[in-house]
Amino acid sequence: MKGKPWLRYLATVLLIAMIVFLRAYVESVIETEDHMRLFGAWKYIIYGMVMCIAIGLLLGAEHLFGEIKKEGKWELNLPKIILLGLPALYLSLADIVYMPIHLLEFVNNSPLGVIFDPWIAIAMNRCYTEYITLIQVLLGYVVITSFYKGSKRVLTHYR
Image (cartoon, rainbow, N blue to C red; front, side, top):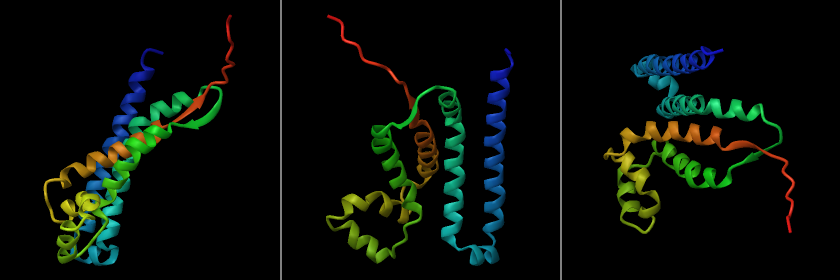
């Protein structure tokens, strides 16, 4: 049984490598002009987002498998979802949101600019785009590791 963890991690690495190569292959096919017209740019972006989230899900799958073996009722780590998951989702969707440049400048200079600044920065090709892939992987990891089984502990009071 000593080789079982090695085999499990090797399988995880191979699945992640398959996802990365599949994403690269499909994106190279979609990038051709004909396919881009058929698929649309937003479908291209969603495909990349789903693949990155899948990598995060694979990275956290070991946690989920450990929880499946436990007894108890499924619960959700709500603070983790709210404090890590929602911001990651918010930033992950930044590539999908499209607004013309004149609207971006108007929104950026308004009070709404504080809320939409990450989306505006990505749409205007500032330095944030390289981090979106990492944030999408984080989103998948946070989602899968937020589920756990609560134990049926009975609280006893000692006097």
